[in-house]
Length: 127
Image 1 (tube, rainbow, N blue to C red):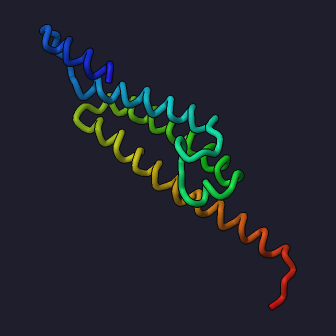
Image 2 (image 1 turned 135 degrees about the vertical axis):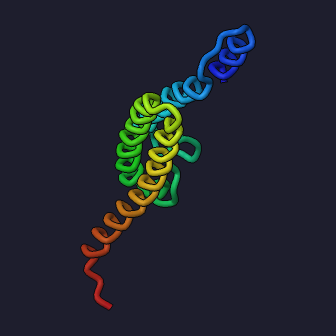
């Protein structure tokens, strides 16, 4: 919010610049820091990738957040690289961000199912 406020003040003082590029730089920093935060987040109900599967298993939480942290950092780098493509820069934010969200949700379910199948096969119950 500070970046947006500073950009508005600078623009009203007569400085002309691409406001979209300013916002994308700010979002890049936010996404990269989110990636760093995700890799260090412990399981909780407030911060992180909170799917039913990550909240029910510590291992799923850790593995999903390790992947999510890397993907958010990669999204930040791609967004920054997108600034070189002018009018298409916004797509370098939206597409990777949506893919990151989708991949982490599907991955958390996949890991949960793999862990559950592994624990069910060793139970030895015959019905």
